[in-house]
Length: 169
Image (cartoon, rainbow, N blue to C red; front, side, top):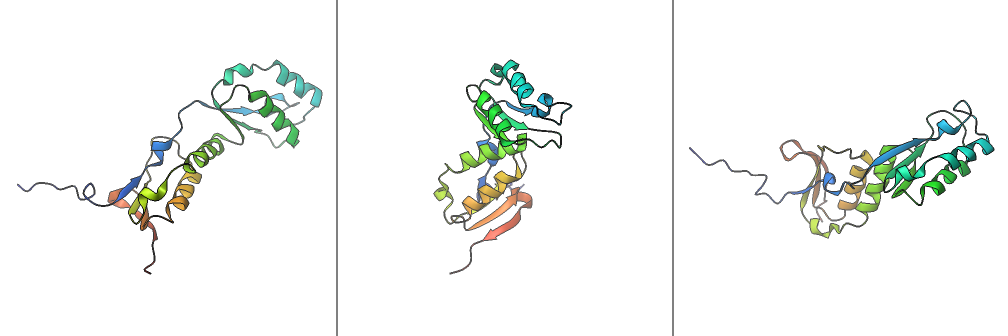
């Protein structure tokens, strides 16, 4: 019987796995509609009172996404005021969903990577993930890899989709 050779493992193909950069930590979402009259009307005095009585310590060292689940028209100061309350406790606060939060976290992380290790190499951006990697992170990673990589594919080595190939000079 012939020995089975793993051609992927012995190739020059570099795997860029965004899951490796997934920031650890609890993620929570705060829906400010809970502090609005009938979920739609912001009455400043009542809103401030709700914020004053809320237990902000529960967000200690957590990543927090602040949003409004209703179609209420929220003044900018209201979201900023929530962020001010969270500042002493949360690791990071963003306006939006958990996906927006993860996108923002990845943006910070991807900016710090030295992509020169991928210079003139074929790269596959791993597509399957057990963690919630947002599409924004895949787009950013590909954008940052492109000036360095000889080629970029997406997916798994056995079924990758070509995205970019350096033009011949």
